[in-house]
Length: 178
Image 1 (cartoon, one colour):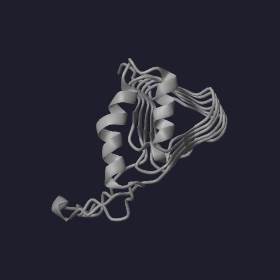
Image 2: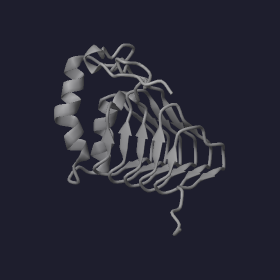
Image 3: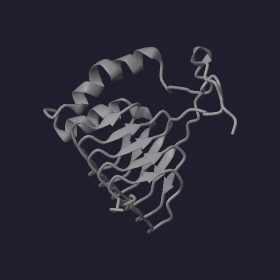
Image 4: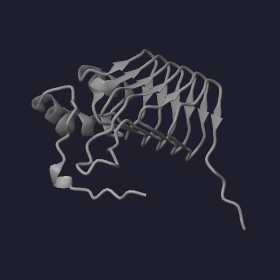
């Protein structure tokens, strides 16, 4: 097995594009993002803030408080979807969520990673797609480059590293007594 020595000082972020300029990124991070996460912000206002920053959000979609969205301009959500309290959409690349999708409390969709075999630890990012009618359950994690198929269920605490076919169920491993 080959061992890669990391030289993090050589990291450049090569190939990663935030999608907006410094001013808009700062306005999102310093003002709009904390405001839209607040429990005091009504869902209708939250949706307007997200749309004002470039998110595409369908009618009837409910985004609860404390949902972390890295870059709203890299988010598209269909109609009548739910995103639960404490979900984290770490969208360095686009996240596309279909209609009638439930992303439950504390779930994480992460489009970012790093090249483990690269001493500079450069990015290895890829988009995520969650098709219509899918359910990403409590505290489940979906990683970069994954498509969750139509009507699929990703069970509570499951870790998804590859595509999930339409209608499939992915369950977290169950610990048993030895």
